[in-house]
Length: 151
Picture 1 (spheres, rainbow, N blue to C red):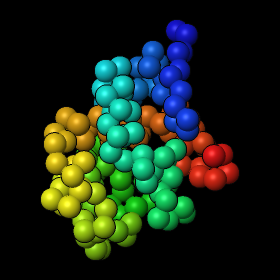
Picture 2 (cartoon, one colour; picture 1 turned 180 degrees about the horizontal axis):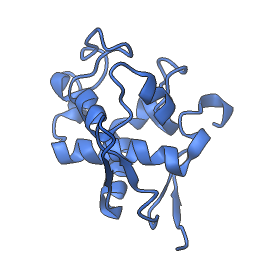
Picture 3 (cartoon, rainbow, N blue to C red; picture 1 turned 30 degrees about the horizontal axis):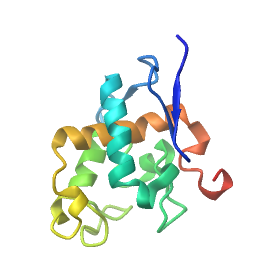
């Protein structure tokens, strides 16, 4: 299958990608899930609208040492390298070591009163965003989360 890429200034996603590209880890037990093409497209749109101001290209502007690539996500406590854990994080964000709530500093559903872009996001929206983040490690490989080396 020929891959067709839609390019934004920094990010890309294979819209006509195969199932393998759109298959991501679902939970800590190793279960996987294959996102639909519509979920991947919606995740990209929501990510760009809600998250890209601070996470463009999978970087973290406030701490460039921690990106959104699967390797960095898996080293967090708890691991955030799966769909359910990223959804949990977007609902109630915690520090990288998992010890401190950062809801007052990082957008999340818990702090939607001070982060308006989070107010109308549904669980389905969060799932699409999380799926998009995880897919990018398959699509953009080392460029996703690679920071200023690539951008």
